[in-house]
Length: 280
Ligand SMILES: C[S@@+](CC[C@H](N)C(=O)[O-])C[C@H]1O[C@@H](n2cnc3c(N)ncnc32)[C@H](O)[C@@H]1O
View 1 (cartoon, rainbow, N blue to C red):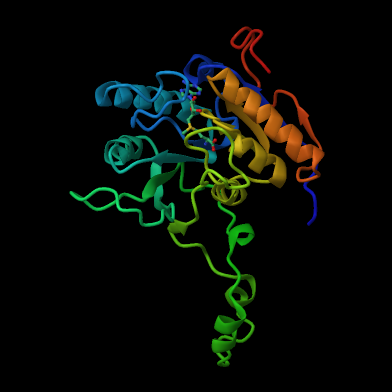
View 2: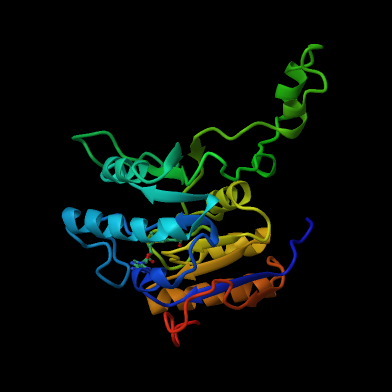
């Protein structure tokens, strides 16, 4: 595999809402936001324990603050659940253009569970952009056809077709296993995302060398995806223990040779004083 060039990342152990105004306007290529869901998860703080009303008010305030930071060619992915995605997507549609709703099928095995409704096994991911002139590079995320399918397309009208050689466009249902307890990627965090998902978003929705912003970093999946693919990354995480997990994760992957060399420095220009003493 060809290694991407040196990349830069920066982690801020901060409340994103207290920092966002310090980020330069129109400087970000892509936001990947995986915020608390209002499901009462324990992130070592009360961030997922708001009432639905407080949660939606808080969600609207960080969304309104982050949009001006995104370039006109840029976009935003937001993870949500069926409980609140309707309200969040309707709100976002007033301020951005909705391109897709991606269903992440977590491939949860059948295990009994609820008897009064259907078992919920998916996340709703919204993909929004600032303008119709948005960046989208399909080629790096195409899925190659298997030999059997390719063989079945040998009729002359298909021969030499680019799509047959380089693969097809992923659909909007992504079937990727969640990270169960003994998964090799798994860190000590209740809602860590598989890197395959984040890497796909980074590759198709940001240019190489571009700046990706993760306001709710968790275990640093976005940082790792950016380092792997040669993007800059600025990430914010309020829990200091998760910040420690992130630093160790990146250090370990780099030492194992899984990640290319990366520098830890601030790629985001903050206004003077906005983040005094906060970088880690
Ligand atoms: C759903 S998790 C993110 C998981 C992450 N995508 C991963 O793959 O590991 C949400 C994270 O947001 C953090 N968080 C909550 N409120 C925050 C805030 N105001 N600023 C920064 N981080 C916050 C929580 O501590 C939690 O780790």
